[in-house]
Length: 306
Image (cartoon, rainbow, N blue to C red; front, side):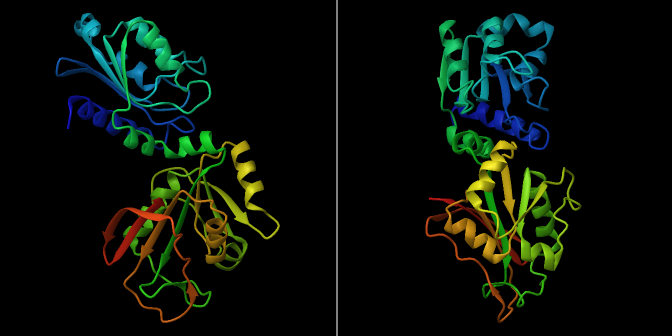
């Protein structure tokens, strides 16, 4: 691992701390380094408050201020270039007079999109872009999908038995265990909205909240026959919904898959055998395994588009 990668890893570690509070802004971490010593670091804690770069500079001690001219600032996402709720971070970096800036990835937001890097380079500061770019983009995949595709980032989530059924002929069946239910509620807390089909909502009356995890409950949607997915995606985009968790049932999941409206799939597989029931959705042909974890006797596999 190179020096740049090492400090970008730290940026990502810091950025993740804002996963529940930075929305709708992206998660961003920043680290200021002189030689091989960190003299400042920070992350974007809450929308409307200081960005990662602001917090990193604020953490530099008075005794180390004179070192900024020789410093490198690492930022997981391109510094902003516009006046929003806070001033442009690109201008702040120029004012601080650092020697070098290392950026993980370009910001897809229309008011930035390379403009922050341009401001910094015009000031004569060296800029390196694309260090751990894939990891930086993945961290803010919800934000990226929303701004680039004008719809929420969509995660399909279901649990099935070892022989491929999600329930016992429409009757709710305990497939998840206590630990995987908590993981599900964590995912809910990280999502802006959650959706089920009309039949699931009426039959199972799911609460769809985060009672097993600390965090806000997502906004609830119920898909009916009268609702078309393209119009729903357009409405969610207009409403600022950056991420959508779909929890079923089978017909609802198939409608998203057949429409190509999915970005991730979380499939939980239990060791239990049901013998018969409602068949689990078939994975899309372009689904590629990204990560797999075993939790008790269950396995959760995360798929992304190949």
